[in-house]
Length: 316
Image (cartoon, rainbow, N blue to C red; front, side, top):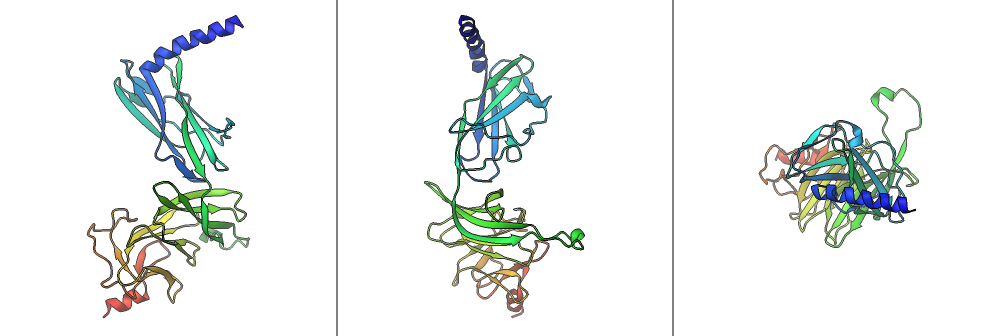
C-alpha cells in the first residue's frame, strides 16, 4: 500500500512539470449536437518546453476517449484517423482537427465528456487533457417522410426491394438560436445515418419540405425577417444546392411544376456568400424581376434551371 502511494506521488511529481511545459486541450466548434450530427473536435497542443515537438510519425501519438455523464465509455467503432506528421515549435500552439463521426457512435442524447491523451515519444511521456463537455440533443421533430433510396443505374437490372430510409426535420432550440436539422434514419428511427444542419430558423416560421422524383429532399426554411434558405439534399445527406430567396410581394413557397420538378414559387432569388455551388457573381441581384409567378427547378444532375413559369416570364 505504501509502495502504491509513493509511486503515485512520484508520478504526479514527474507529470506536473511536464504539464507546465506542454498543455493539451480538446476544443469543439459547438457545444450542442443533434444525435447523428458529425462530431468534429480539435486537439490543441501548447508548447512551452523550449524544444520543437514532432507528432504523427505513428498513430500512437494520440488516443481519444468519450464517456457519458455516468462515466460509461462510448464504444469505439474504429481507430481515430490522426495520421500525418506535424511539428509544434516552442512558444506556439497547434490545433489538429479530427472527425470522430466514423470512430464513435453516440446513440442517445445526454451529456458527454471528451478527453485526449498525447504521447511525446521523444520524451517517453504522455499528457492528458481536461475533459471537454458536449451535449447531444434529441431535437423536436417537425416533419417526417419514409422513402426508398434510388437504385444506381448499374443496378437497375437487379430486381430487389429498395432500401428504405426516413427523412426527419428536427428543431434544436438553444438559448440564443433555433437550428433546423435534417436527420436521416432507418424507418423505425432506431438507427441514425447522419444529421445535417440546414439553417438557423426564426421562431415564428414553419419549414417546408418536398421530395422530388429522385427522392431528394427540398427544404425551404425562413432564416430572417424576409429571407429564406432553400436547400436540396440527396438520400445520403449530401448537399446538392443551397440558395437564398427573399420575400417580396409574395412569400416564397415550394411547389411542383407540370413535369413534377420542385420549384421555389414566389418571392425572388438573391445571391449570397453561402450559395452552393457558389454563384458566379456576388452581386445581390434577384434572378427574377418582380418575384411573382416564377420558379427555379433543380435538374437530375443537381444544377439549377428555370421552371416553366420562369421560361414564360423571360419571354415577355
